[in-house]
Length: 280
Ligand SMILES: NC(=O)c1ccc[n+]([C@@H]2O[C@H](COP(=O)([O-])OP(=O)(O)OC[C@H]3O[C@@H](n4cnc5c(N)ncnc54)[C@H](OP(=O)(O)O)[C@@H]3O)[C@@H](O)[C@H]2O)c1
Image (cartoon, rainbow, N blue to C red; front, top):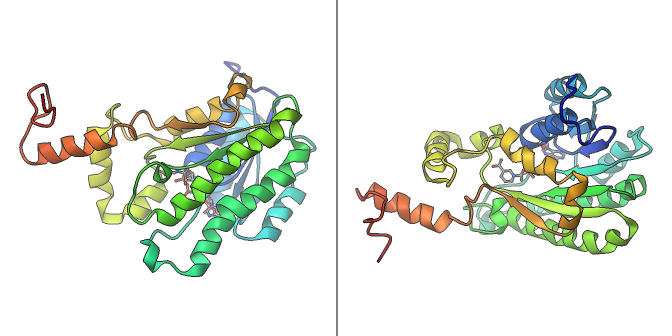
């Protein structure tokens, strides 16, 4: 077990969607900082167990429970399965949707997407609240880049995540007087297996474009994106109550310039002081 920097020693976190990607990286980061983590998974029990094993080496007592956020009873069962009589952090990370233009969506896809990120986010907040520590308990919700800019086929998820952001602000106001706080994180591109699956044959091209145009000249790994989620759990983040913190490395603000620069370079221009896109 690491005996280095452990600012969250003795804390307990429930992290949804902890079997892969950002959720798994967040679980490992929090465990490294001394938090006992309970992760949820939907189908991939084996992947979840591997995350549990790596977290337990960092802070003993990690475990995984099954949760399908589409189903109300599954949410209730997951909270019944929690032995914990106290939680410090609820990290609402899991998401799923149908990626389609709005006119092609089926109504059940809308219902399921909103069940995960809105209906059952509220239910989880209700079920978690009695367990949350009133001297630092925190709800952390993971939003996404599609709420601040157009991403093809992301309209439905963007609407659900934008609602989730609003819920974070309301939770911050409603729960703040009790000592429990709520914050959101908004990552940009994260290089996860979900992204690879979603982008299919375009994956390599899009990842390369991210690396070449992002201000940090990198495509964020789940571990890098998880750093800010872990920061949101520190006591010092209390005054971020109600904020949606962009942990995109500056990539989203720069998006228009990145696009123009890439388009100009594709036409043979070179970026620099004499670039035609600078304009002066
Ligand atoms: N990847 C990105 O570029 C990116 C960018 C911005 C924001 N985000 C957000 O960051 C979060 C994590 O994204 P990610 O790409 O790491 O992973 P993800 O593919 O969005 O989610 C994977 C995790 O969610 C679980 N999950 C899937 N459907 C579920 C359901 N119906 N109920 C409960 N759990 C379910 C999966 O369980 P199983 O393993 O068992 O299937 C897995 O643990 C999401 O909220 C996503 O919207 C991602």
